[in-house]
Every structure is written in structure tokens, then in C-alpha cells.
Length: 213
Figure 1 (cartoon, rainbow, N blue to C red):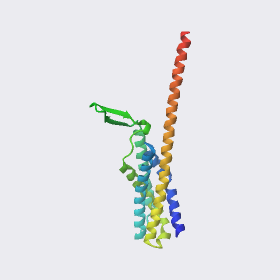
Figure 2 (cartoon, one colour):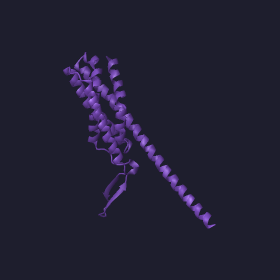
Figure 3 (cartoon, rainbow, N blue to C red):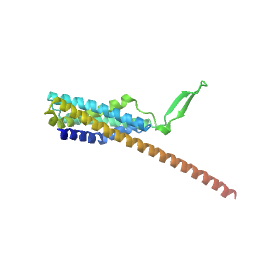
Figure 4 (spheres, rainbow, N blue to C red):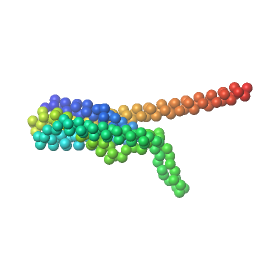
């Protein structure tokens, strides 16, 4: 029994790093600091697990078989969701600003580009995105549960819970790596901008001196 539950946990880990999940979390978690990226990943994973687990348990306990064509249709829904997230990432890529007052009656706005490019998603967005992506995995989880379902309904729920924990853990890892890569990319961008600026100043100074001499 423990081996079966451990297998479900491992399946959850693998499920969480599916390419569609990685891209979705990457789009949502690449903006902002590490804490925000992890929060986005956890919300995505929780929304994903709640919908996936609840529907899989309901189908299993009710003895309902989910047709493969339904799974294919829900995969299309996941593809549309990825398309929407991709467009949102491309269209909201400008530097974020935070308007506030300094006490002089004038509204000021500071660039928050160092914390991430563009606005961060709202908490409900991450939950909803995870829930939508959870729909297409219901059939696969249902097919993995019969071994624990033979024991009891409680065993089934424990299996789904462990599967969900695996999903959330792996999605947190994806969010962590995404944010680290985004920070490294911004550091390289700043270094390149500094290098180009210094090279331009040096070249301009040499150009002036060379032509005046």
C-alpha cells in the first residue's frame, strides 16, 4: 500500500513538470521576486490539484469512465489557455510602475523593472489557470487510482492528496527555476547595457580626440 501511495506521489512530481505546466507557470511566475514566484506556483498547483483530484475521485467513486475523446478535447482547452497566457506575456512586457504620493500633492511613479517586467498576475488568475490545466489530467489520474480504490475511499483520497503534494512540490521547483533564470537574464541585460554604454563613451571620446588632433 505504501509503495502504491509513493508511486502516486512520484506521478504527481512528474505530472507537475509537464511541458504545458512549465510554460504556464513560466508565464505567470517570471515577474517579480522569488517569494511571489513561489506563491504563484503554489496557487497554480493548488488550483490544479483541487480540480483534478475532485473530478478524478468523483469519477472513480461513481464508476464513470472518461472517454479518451473527452481528454483530447480538454487538451485543446489547455492549448487555448497556453495561447492566452503567451499573448498576455508578450503584450504586458513593459516595465511596471508604482504610482504614489510623496506628500507634495503630486503623483509620482517609480520604475519597478528591477523586480520584474510588467505586471504580476492576480492571485485568482494563478488559481484559475491551474484549475483549467487540471481538467485534461483527470482521465490519467482515474486510471492510476484503482489500486488504492480497492482498499477504501480514504485510501483513494490519501492517494489523490499525495499526488497533489507531488504536483505542488514540482511546480514550486519550476517557479523557483523560472524566477532565477529571469533574474539572471535581467542581470545579463543590465551588464550588456552598461558595457555598450561604456564602449560608446570611450569610442566617442577617442573619435573626438582623433579628429581634433
